[in-house]
Length: 297
Image 1 (cartoon, rainbow, N blue to C red):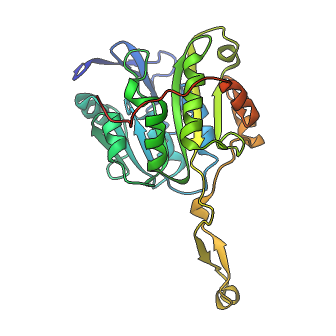
Image 2 (tube, rainbow, N blue to C red; image 1 turned 45 degrees about the vertical axis):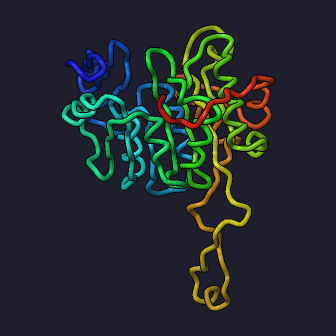
Image 3 (cartoon, rainbow, N blue to C red; image 1 turned 30 degrees about the vertical axis):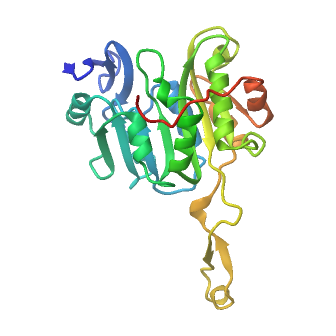
């Protein structure tokens, strides 16, 4: 089918007819199981899902930069019913077609907006999302205004404290782009992000060993305020005494957690987690990509 930026094609899996892959201009962009909204086929999306599982229980507010077939948004709604999500894609006709073709959550649970991802991010209110996902490509590269320190700072601004940015970074040996993107996230999210367990990178071992081109998932968590908001105790005795408890919505995931590493190692295609000192060593002396705010040129 013709779309605004070229053409789209849906191909069924011959072994599992309910599974389809959306190709945009010949490139696989989304894979969905029409009978299972929780299904994730692409390895990098399975890795992203492991990070989202670290967040406190309940519905989430999620911004998807690069919507395509909205496979990840379907998964989030399946796992976190009642989540409010916005999917952004440059191609207006593509968004119309995926609404027709796939069983996507309806608005306001999932809104789809035809817009430039940088412009959509810049228009987001401060501290308005639990998760921001960057999954935008022009060919095999992410547009320049959606990488580097400017993009990372805008994403951090849009995240609530304890919220997480997830980045799909495609790279080839020696992974120079990925290392510089990690350095950019470290600059935007604070010099202690790695040491505090708020910065991580994930990839299959073959990619990390420099054997092939592939996708890495980079993650950064916005720090909590020094004095997070407190809520009254639920018990009547505590309430009478004015006791308080931390606001559970402000939980801060620790990306060094053993359960995250286990979840990634036990995927169908095992992946390696680098967090703490490991992710700092991965970035090494790579220079951040110094870029302006994530608005379109």
